[in-house]
Image (cartoon, rainbow, N blue to C red; front, side):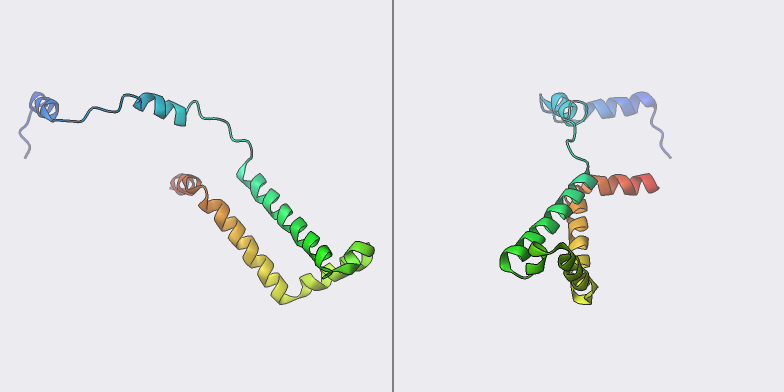
Length: 122
């Protein structure tokens, strides 16, 4: 089959005309791996922060536009109003869709994490 000796293969490999690596290759690899800045927030913390800010913005918008006037005046009425709103299937569908989009975008923003999860499963 292959009648090449190791010396023949080494000569063939060293005879290849290869490009030289960039001068800063080692430094850029180290900067991206070993010397990388630590992550300030974990991904689940960012998702939780985004969801919290979305709920706060939704409640503030409802108060400002007068959609939930009882929320500003009476906490009990506000809780009942929110309970009625959350018992509506359309509202729950929109909340589920928004949550799914938030999770999808969070995962999409870091595709390396998805790849590492797939590799870890193998």
